[in-house]
Length: 165
Image (cartoon, rainbow, N blue to C red):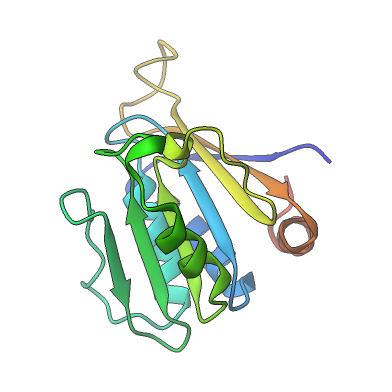
């Protein structure tokens, strides 16, 4: 199945889409996020976290701490791999986190896992639509969401039913 794409005109749009996606996620869900610096990965995470019942204002970019866990109705683990390459990660720790099934795991800079596939979840790609595309405003983004495995397919099917393409 093809990825779904949306146009985001501002940071609030990106957060709203994250919130819609977050409402569809079950415990154990994993989302990989890919995009350049400042593209809106953390804004998307804020929306997902809001849908999971995380207190407003807690979500921040965990770049300097690698992982932050937020309590909520559904706990959220927020990883940022910007400062890591695949070989520098503790794979056992990461596997334990992903297999725990206790909450939702969101991984910014997912591509830095060094080619490790996301076997069941969603991959969210965020790209600049304005400044890199030569038109539009600097706030415009294109968000593509693709499924990885049966859980991701289920969420994407529900998302198609709610917001269309």
